[in-house]
Image 1 (cartoon, rainbow, N blue to C red):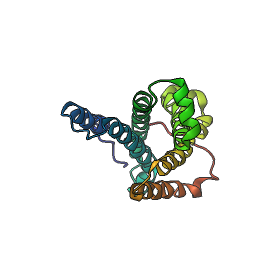
Image 2: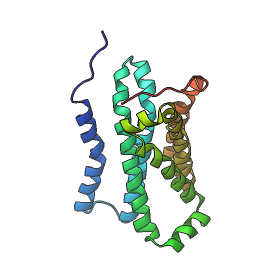
Image 3: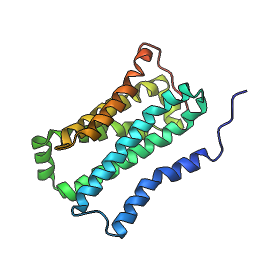
Image 4: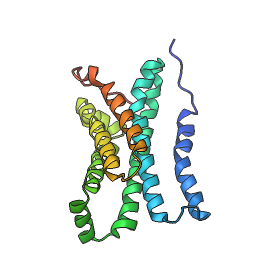
Length: 200
């Protein structure tokens, strides 16, 4: 008999997923953001958006390796937290770097390609977040699974954004890139399988 999912799994995951935000709030309140607080906040929120994106992609391999199909129940929440932190990242960029000025925004996109790639990565997450509900799964049917393959493009764009952004140490970018490549390559054997969709 298949093991039942832990009833407190989702509430615990929700609280753990809020921990990075709570830590950031503590740093802000205790003035521990360093000499460039704006840069710290922007990079921190961006890093956690990418962390949650990779965790979302990790669910499928984990449930196969651990033979725990119930892990899929947590994928939607991880994906939504990815969008949450990505949106926080975008809001911080808009506030601290662009200042909500259209002229500066268009100039940044022209002169800094990593900004354009990062913005594109966020845009790919929008339809995924908007359709991460049971109504959309029922309404879209098999098209839902095809739409949510956009997450692979999101991962590629996010890693390219990070690699393009870094100017000194590339260790972090290399580690993220290797993780993304592994998680995407793991899915290659399933590329030609018919699309399916799973409720979570």
